Image 1 (cartoon, rainbow, N blue to C red):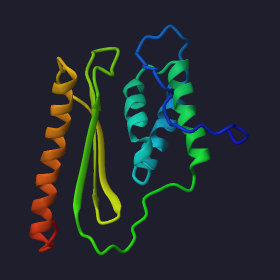
Image 2: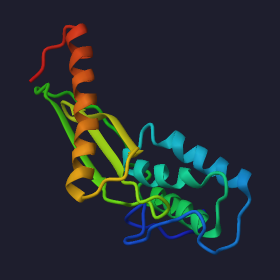
Image 3: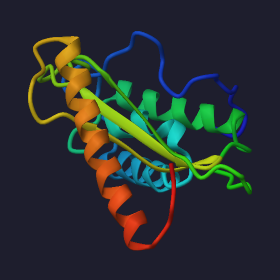
Image 4: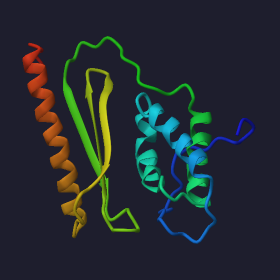
Length: 169
């Protein structure tokens, strides 16, 4: 992987993975080790969180396509190795949140994946990507579920900040 070419995105466009894709199985312990390392990196690289979240669903029986997708994340990381979370001094102390989801992104059970991130001042400080627990019947419903998860996190963050006597907008 040292001599690989970098890619501009961690996930290939229009590629959806599924449990049984017809390709040969790969070494489970090697795949789990790779995904575990990528999970560790998500603590400072929210840009790979969605891709790692999706690939972690195949830990019990990974295939060649899953390994190729995991290696794509490594290729992305090679080209963006200086990316990360950087906290800078800021005059503004605004809590901002963003949420999004894919609708029926899982080919196995048609469930969507929600994601959100929150920033305070100039940097993102909390983020999440998680498969939704129910099957959304429309894009609007999937987005509503994602927004609800983000709103719950925002309320929790607001309470924590109030308990710490932090004033914000």
